[in-house]
Length: 167
Image (cartoon, rainbow, N blue to C red; front, side, top):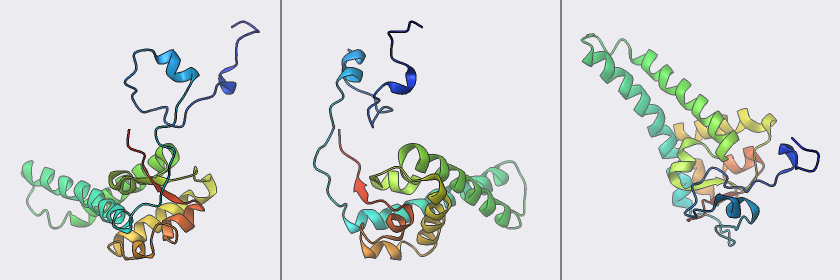
């Protein structure tokens, strides 16, 4: 590496670095990142509710897949394995939520519902955000009726919730 080149820590990376671009010239995309959408509006309340529903369904999906897998393998008594399958679904959801909140600024359900946090979640608030999302999922999304600005998720993250810009 020469002394006149930029160090990797000083390169300006666009906010949507992991989104595929339609352009063939990737250097032009990196040199001049253009925002996908400038106008940011508060997402509808139904999207905040849907985020909680999707989080619950994602955890239940892993639980169901584990039980179906046990039944397919010929193990009878899948009902006895229900607590273990539920614990597996919860553990998967917690791990996926932690990773996605750090990388994509939203839980799996939030991303499926098309909403994200406007600002990155500070590491010290990560457990609080995951706990708020879990409680909201257990309550079938009822805390989402407060709207995007007063949602427990937004309060836990100390950030506003916004819609994912459509590309």
